[in-house]
Image (cartoon, rainbow, N blue to C red; front, side):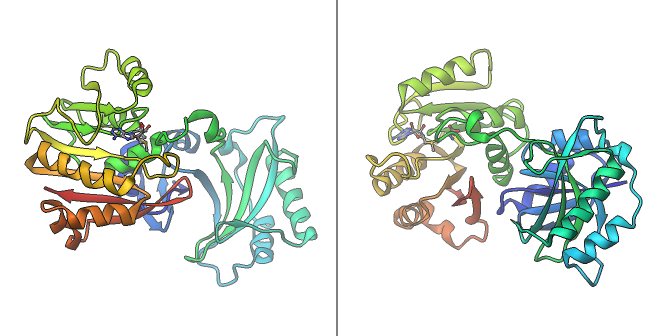
Length: 343
Ligand SMILES: C[S@@+](CC[C@H](N)C(=O)[O-])C[C@H]1O[C@@H](n2cnc3c(N)ncnc32)[C@H](O)[C@@H]1O
């Protein structure tokens, strides 16, 4: 069995094990801490890595030092260079290069030059790789964390810059997936979902993949975005695209929606929007369209405005006492919360 470790957006600890198991069916012996998880699996580590697209980094742990008493980098390097490793598992090419990184409590640190050279020489020889400190190649890490985890690891993820793949304001697909999982929605059935601030459609797309048989209304006030969504979801029979203001969803009858799940504007980019007023008005409209047992799931960075709007809403205010009401998360490094409410 190989030991795999992943870093992910803090706040999603509750669902990370379930999410990994849905992609790596023999994953076991999980250990979850803030934004970090490790587990064991006998599947090919490179294939595991490509299936865990919701993780920031995925590592193959080559040596776990968590139970060692001495976890300073000199001790970790000394123990590593006297160990044996099976390099074939990494599927490295003859021309591959590498760089070595030392990570302490999630921060890269510099260590004594001689120690770095000693570890680099060992990696170069053991894994037949060229050393290239400018990066771009494979990465080996010595890592220590405040939760006691310490390891020599091979980083398997080689991500492109996210700016290239996502539009401004678009919820990255991995967050949309983790948000939908946090909401603990049914996997199948004739449920009606609404994302009234659908933007580029990240949440409706994930809902259509996660809940077979449901109907998803994806609406937004912005005509251009609605046009793009209509094109993107053309042929997807589960998703219905509409242009609409979220405070007046007239295409829904009263008590007709099972779940509103959405990522409304946070006020970061849209300075012209009165966020407190928008949040108050949207809650009134969501109350109208939701069925009596309906759920409301909101992701926002404008926490105070949302919580104030909930307090003032006659139907939703009861939720503030519920332990699941609020989970703090980090979305692209920004503090946000996921709110789960019942009508
Ligand atoms: C944070 S973005 C949502 C991003 C979306 N989850 C995605 O993945 O692209 C907020 C969206 O709300 C839309 N919006 C702003 N005010 C609105 C309103 N009153 N009614 C409906 N949509 C609105 C914006 O056009 C924007 O697309």
